[in-house]
Length: 271
Image (tube, rainbow, N blue to C red):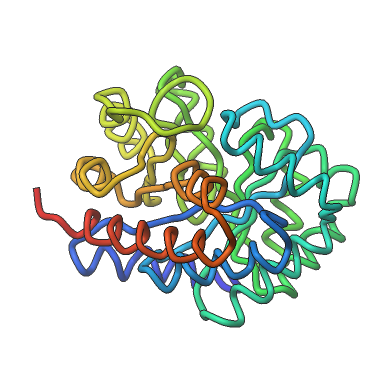
C-alpha cells in the first residue's frame, strides 16, 4: 500500500507500537469559517490528535446529530464549497505533516465526479475518505479511483452488522474500520457502552485493519474506556460543541486544543 494512505497506516501503527490508541478528531470544513476551520484542525493536532477527519458539510446529514448539523448549516450558509474542503485538507496537512481524511456522504462526490474528487484529494495531501452511506457492494468504482491515487477507503460498521456483513465490509476497506459505538446519530453520551466493545471484537475477527470507535466519546475517561479495546478513539461532536459555544474563534481554538490534550492523555491510560 503506497501513496497518501501510507502516512495514515504508519501513524496508526506508531500508536500501536507505543501501546496506546490513536486519537482521531473530526471537524467540519468551513466552520466557523474556512480559515477558522483550518485553524481549528491545527489546534487539535497541536493538542495531541494523531489524525483528523475533515467533514464535508451536507444539507441532509442523516447520520449526524444536532451539534454537527448546526455546524454544517453555518458552513453551508457561509458558502463552503468542495474547493474549500480541499484547501482545508491541503493547509492542515501541509502545516502539520499529519494524516487528514475527508468524511463525506456519497452524493457530493457523485455530483462532483469520482475521478476529479480523488485526484484533487490526493493532490491536496489527503489520506483518504470515510464514506458512511456508500454501500460496499456499490463501491467498486470509487475504490478503483481511490487506489489509483493512493487514498484509503474507510467504511463504517454498526452494532447491527452481522458477522458475514462485517467480513464483506472489512475486506473492501483500507486504512481503518470506523466502528459506530451504538445505533443512532452522532453526539456526546454519558457512556459509550458494551455494544462498542462487542462490535470491535467481532470486527477484529474479520480483519487485520485497525478498528477505531466513534459516536459518543467526549472526555478523557471515555477515551480511556474505549482505548482499552479499540485501536483508535474518534471524537467529533465534543470538539464542534466547544467551537459553537465559544464567544469567539480564539476562545474556541483554545478550548479544542485543551480538549485534544485531555483526550490524548486519555488514550494513553493503561487500563
